[in-house]
Every structure is written in structure tokens, then in C-alpha cells.
Amino acid sequence: MASFDVHKKETTELLQLVSFFIGSEEFGVDILYVQEINRMSQVTKVPNAPDFVNGVINLRGRVIPVIDLRLKFGMPKKEHDKNTRIIVMEVSGKTVGFIVDSVNEVLRISKDVTEPPPELAMGINSEYIKAVGKLEDRLLILIDLEKILSKEEGVQLNSVMATEKEVT
Image (cartoon, rainbow, N blue to C red; front, side, top):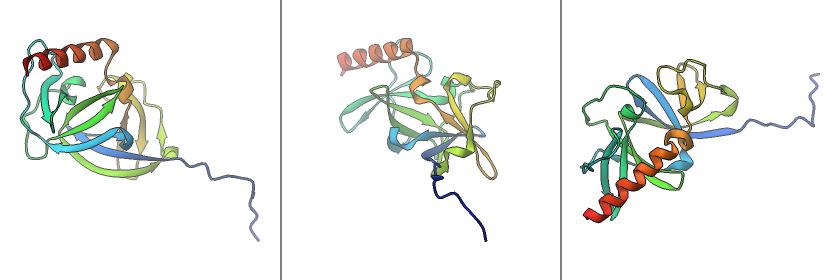
């Protein structure tokens, strides 16, 4: 007869993530940050914006800055195609759109299958990486959205938004 400890609690925390691709790498963000996922739309360029800021979009009357994650991660620029998406997220109190190559799926993974990022984190700035999830047949890079924009970049985004509001 098998014995078990009735006092042992199931502590497996589930992470609910939206996964997406940039190049051949698969990334994930906590679904609680995600407001919506949209097809690529007309992005209005903003003068003097940082390189990684693609511009702004009008989302039901709200002007939202759009960041190209490829450029933010130091990857080469890519032409947008039918799979390109803008993931609209709430980051550090700001609503921001992030351009990704394609959105893959919403998934739930156990926190037990994640581990801290390796020292040399796959060519992108490891400060943006919260963890790496080991799934059956692939690795999922979990992004730390709170660190994706430095304080300075947040200030730059605010000035972009202020400039855009004066223009519109």
C-alpha cells in the first residue's frame, strides 16, 4: 500500500501566458498585461522618437505608442506581413503597443518548468528576460515587461506622447 503525506500541499503555480515569435525565438508575457492583440495597422511616425518606437496608433480614440520589439531587442528590422501583430499591453502604468512577428497561442505552464535565464541569454539583452520556460519540445523566453522600458525610455515615450497630442 502506497503512503503519502496528507500535509504536503500542491504548490504548483500556473502561469497564463500569451506566446509570440520574433524571428525563430518564442517569447511569452503574462496574460494579465495584455489588453488586446491587433493586426498591423497604420502607424503614424513621430519626429524625434527613439529608434525602437515605430510611431503611434489611434486605438478607438486613444493615441498609443508602438514599439518594435525586434529593434528593442537589437534584432534586424523585418518587413511586416500578414502575421505581424501589435500586442497592446499595460506596462508601468502606460498603454503601449508592441510589434511582434506573429502571435502563437495562449498557454498555461507550471512555474516549476521555468528557470532563471542563462548568463548569455540568446543574443537579446538578458535584463529583459524574467525566466526561460522548458516546454516539451521548445523553450519559451518569458519577458519582464516592467524592465522592457528604462526610466529614461519611459520619459522619452512620455515626450513622444506629448508631442503627438500637440499635433493632433
